[in-house]
Image (cartoon, rainbow, N blue to C red; front, side, top):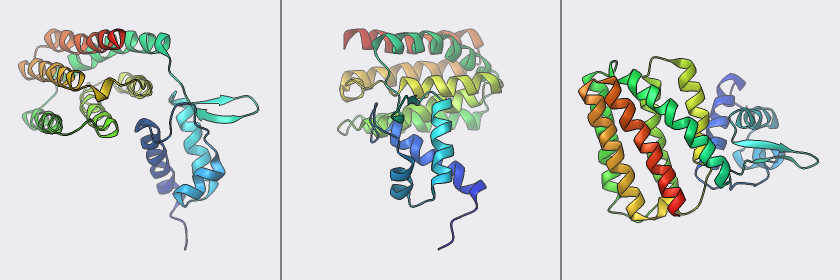
Length: 214
């Protein structure tokens, strides 16, 4: 069977590997063997090698001397540094989005929060909950009107989700995050950049507090 065009295959392989990392299926510290991953995904080594390099650029993987690439490990000190910067950038992204989001855009965000609400009835599923959280924040940053900001936030948000612990397994943490997301949406609906900035920053500071309590 002929392998798909590399220009199409590369982004697909990157998305698959990124999801394996963010879902925790490839845990922090896990080796990223190009040969093993190529066999797992049923593709050649070239797009896997490129995808691993992209993960390194995004801060989701690191190169260990004499050991090759591994999934990055984010410890307590690092996560606080990441979130301190993310709080500021999330605030800027929300402020920018507040004046750009259309009624249709706000409707999409509302549906995202409805999905998060529905999932509170089910047992915790960190992979699912991380995906929903990323979807919400990605939508906002991509509508900030600032591509440079969106690129940097994408890296910080991905690194933040490498931090494991049991944060996504506690019902209280899940419901608290949803309340904070609702406040962000309400601020975006108001169209006031300062309110959106404050709500977004408060959400990240709330996450820092939950980590400190963990």
